[in-house]
Image 1: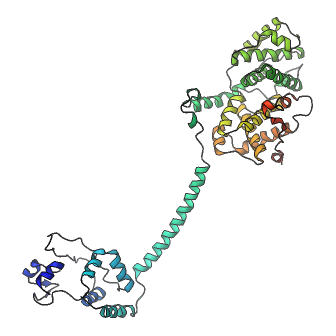
Image 2: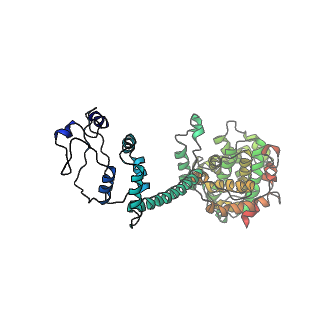
Length: 432
């Protein structure tokens, strides 16, 4: 092989010739064979001792005059198998490229004989192979764990809390920036709108049965007058708070308290307020104009003009939005909670708990199973377990809604305007 051919392959350059051809402490002749046989290289690789301080450098090429990248030295203390040799060629494209350029360095029969001699030797499986298999098993195990974790994350994402106000960001009336603070304020102050659940014990001439008759009648009056929903809830709240604070109400004055409370609620909530004469007319002229105005003064002073308190209605609107309700769910929820307004025993629950329980009961009634989402739990502050007791009582009220004398709510919601919500079968499975 001529000198030009040697320079073309970059095996030995002019610098090596000038330095006398020294390599590894032996004199290499400058003429004749200038390359080491692959069999000698393999022998050195297989049997040579480890010299950690040795650095193998590749010569400069004559063409570009820059150093080629260093190729990591082979693990000289490990035997070379056919598989490992193939892996080296695959992982080191530079070696593969150079070897393909010089196919005549050693015959295939010689290479097979070298590899066969090594394979027939008595030695354990190379350590790096064992480590590789163990590492692959660990990688497979970790991938399985990651897949399980990713599945768990997907479930958590599906059950995560939804942003129920994202659709109203461009609606200034929705006050998205303040809505959470508003309802936080409502939750903190709802206790001020509550009354002792046994306040009737202090009344000498009236009882809870009379209270139920009054409220059932006022629900029908509210429906006939086509007043706003907020007005009904505030009317009942004013009645209970006044009766709890004023302990000497005569039986014949109880209806007067009811119509006066509705007049005050209308002045606070309605745009068009019913006139006093209309209230006298619906009470069958049992009271005069003066009596109504005097009772109005007494109630306003007793309650210290404090009419701005959260009722179940404000919580109903928010919790229905969190439940992503449709019209059917909304009507059934209001039917259930209005049944509770008539019942004296339901005063033991706060307005927010009544609202959440009514929606939970309505959802369970329509779907046939218990349903309370993470979003509803987050915005209401109540878990499914905390609602079950109140919900079971609501199911009992639903069962007897059209029975007895107090059927005003049932008749109201048994019309096409309210979607015949009263005809829906109650969720009896909640009682089990």
